[in-house]
Amino acid sequence: MSISGLQRQFFPLLFPLSVAYGLAMRARSNVLQSRFMSRFRAPCACVSIGNIAWGGTGKTPLVEWFMHWAAGRAVRAVTLSRGYGARLQHPPVMVNPRHTAREVGDEPLMLAHSCPQIPVLVDPERRRAADLAVSRLRPDLILLDDGLQHLGMERDLDLVLLRPEDLGAQWNRVIPAGSWREPESALERADAFFIKCPPHAMETLMPAAVERLARFGKPLFNFSLAPMHLCRIDGEAAISAADLENRPYTLVTGVGEPEQVKATVAAYIGYDPKEVIAHPDHHRYTLREVECMAASRTMIICTAKDAAKLRLFSCPDTWYLRTELQFGPALWTDSPFPDWWNAWWRARCIECELA
Image (cartoon, rainbow, N blue to C red):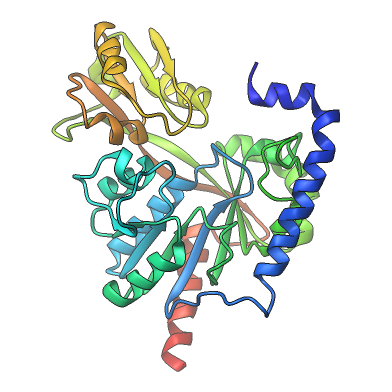
């Protein structure tokens, strides 16, 4: 049975623990934000992109969008990540394509491959990484990856990602009775909300969004990931779905929402995979697993996050689906997110010039 299934089955037993955990997290937030605690303030703009719940919100693609935005405008930016599962030798570590996912974490490595112009620093202690970034890189913008619960750093914007189910059955279901890391009071820190889902699905979520989020008085933005093409993991080739000519393929995933990945890939290619090999999020591939993949005698399709780890092996005929983040409908603002963000950035720049 899945974790969510166990949570539903044992909810009456887990609920008291959930209440206690939520109260503890709220107390932690109050203490860390109090005037008695020292918080790091960077001499540049700091934007946090974080989740209220674990897994599957699209946080990493949104961080990637910001990195490409900065690179395209010659904005000196740096991304700070804790590097989930990384075995850091001497943090902070600046990620380069020669690192492995074991050394720096799969998501930081994927971001470094996707946008090498923007440095990615990995360190569980974000303040230490921020100190290094400020002293050596002199950024105009710090992107705090997965930063909602990291309150040791002050930020200018808190962008909070929600899943569709967070507006329904999972609303305020705090660990261990649910997947929320903090109770709903944490949403008061948000400057904007995001939900990853197709635009047509966003329309059906509007009533729940209004009921749950209107009282916070912050804009809600929708985004989705549109498939573009298939890239070979060595970066030497790219093909479209039409080039496959009905070739069978095996889908390999190690992400938080494998069913969502399967639906996206199958919709893009036009038919289902011959086999799906689904691993837990942040899975570390072994040589034996790669050999088993090759034994399927089909082409292998995976996600960009999986590709960052599989590059370590010799994986012939292995491809990842390149996607592009696209913004959809918004609530409580007349501006699509890129316009909203550009307006905020211009205002920030003017404010700094006048200071």
